[in-house]
Amino acid sequence: MSVLSAHQVSVTIDGNPIVADVDLEVSAGEVVVLVGPNGAGKSTLLSVLSGDVDPSSGHVELAGKHLGHRHARELARLRGVQLQKQGLAFGFRVHEVVRMGRSPWHRTEAAERDDVAVEDSMVRADVTELADRLFPTLSGGEQARTSFARLLAQETPVLMLDEPTAALDIRHQEQLLGVVRDVAAAGAAVVVVLHDLSLAAAYADRVCVLANGRVRADGPPAEVLTGELLTEVYGHPVDVIHHDGALLVVPVRPRPVTTLTDTSEEESSCSAV
Amino acid sequence: MSATTVPVTPVRATLRGVVARVGLLGGLTVALAVILVLSAGTGQLDIPRDEVLGSLLHKIGLDLGPVPSHPQGENTLWQVRFPRVVMAAIAGAALATAGALMQGVFGNPLAEPGVVGVSSGAAVAAAAVIVFGWTFAGSWTVALCAFLGGLLTTTLVYLMSRDGGRTEVVTLVLTGIALNAMTSAGLAFMMFLGDTQAREEIVFWQLGSLNGSRWEYVGVVAPLALVGIVAAMLLAPKLDLLALGDRAARHVGVDVERLRIGTIVVVAVLTAAAVSFCGIIAFVGLVVPHLIRLIAGPGHRLLVPASALGGAVLLVAADLWARTAVEYADLPIGMLTSLIGGPFFFWLLRRARRTAGGWA
Image (cartoon, rainbow over all chains, first blue to last red; front, side):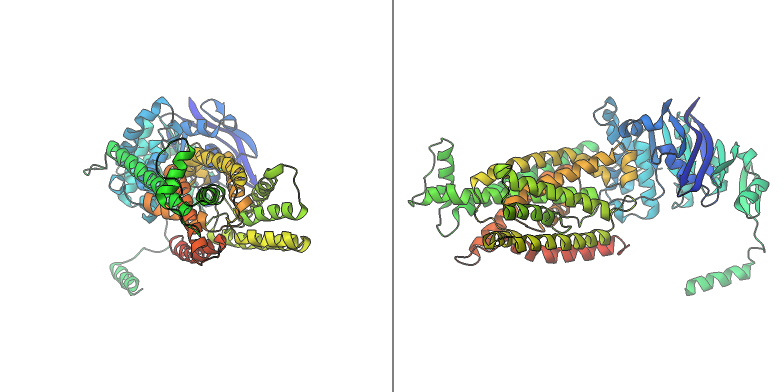
């Protein structure tokens, strides 16, 4: 049964349709990845799903109730969101930021779990070593991981992440999406916006391809991520390669990438800069 | 996800927090008590500290310590000094709390009632009361009008400097310039309309002064400040979350719109409390919360009460200096706070430019 569902959702800004007639169902235990070219409406759709933006038409249901009919605090106990850009106005420390994720549970029984949840989330997001650092002094990737820890600490049945891996190195990308899978396996419903199609292929139960604000395809990665569809949607030739049981999505490049001599030339020109 | 190093255990962290909290608030309370007694005893007629304390104790029915030996001592203390130092403490506490709140709600360490024009907005309304001789609410008339003026300007600042859920440093400062220009025009117009006596009153009050504080005024200002500070402490935990930005704050359960409106009203109450009888005393709300943040971090649960106490200490000390720096002269206190606060503001501005990525 779906925990989160969008019904004929449209968002129009200044007469431009950003999202048009989107239907989307996300069930508990499932990781749904939204992909699509720039301006496809991924982030806007996510902000409709999270309740930040009211759709121009259509509606979103979260845990069986109209999203617009819930209070901020009630919503915060149902869904957590990690935004693409992290910001913090004052110099709070990492552990304080993670603890902010616990605030929806203040004065409830769940507040007893605060310390455990914070510590556990920091371990899972690999920010334990940063606990006493000031958030604004962290690198982009470290800030993203801290926000991820905050999201985990919120312990909601629905999680939404907007390009959580954009600033992360390859190890932390894999770790983060691995944790996302674990959270889903434990029963959460997860929606992730990703740009990296190979990551989407590896970690999604379902991939939803958006183009021009509409759902172009929705299904298991192997069915949806085809060279034909992606080439059309992205307006660039794309190859899908099956390698060792995994799907790799690579753009077709017009000329052979580089020969050895080329590489060394490029490197030297880089270091000159 | 190999976490070999164990983080600070929550229990120890909490304990450390409690100790820091008690230490800072306790220290500031003691400092406030000391400076109050010191200030009350100092002036053209010096009264020894033990006599100040003795007079206080006798008043509350305890026959302890000596009473003032000078024939005018008792009168000076209770008619002039005590109302003045208490007024200074209340105004300082109100201004510093208002500053901490504004910085929290704007997510910008440069927001302050004086800098962004809220104080002068309240001042225009209060000047109108002086010029037109309104008395519809008795001794509360000035405070009420100052509150409405403050509320109007705070709302204006908020609406004009906010863009896409953020307040950029430069937008906020420019909004302050625009508003201060408008309120200066308003004050100038009030002076043009008023008679000589009203003009003199407005000028003194524009400079900020605690001269002529009376118990009657304290009776108006104290409840306003108390309500404001209590409300500020209730808002404090949510202001922490607002530091995440509007959207992320909503994601963790903050009703951002309601919090904002509530905070703006409280800022107006606090500013009105300070401005209605003491005039414009700028920069207290900037300097104090900033120093507290340096010592105790940005958490508003501690920042708000510590700023209130710190603001009280600062303004009582500044007032003591204002009336003793030059013999037989009572310097305007607003002039002094601006003299110190101005350079401090420069320093903050340069820092904000560096750390927040310039003027973006």
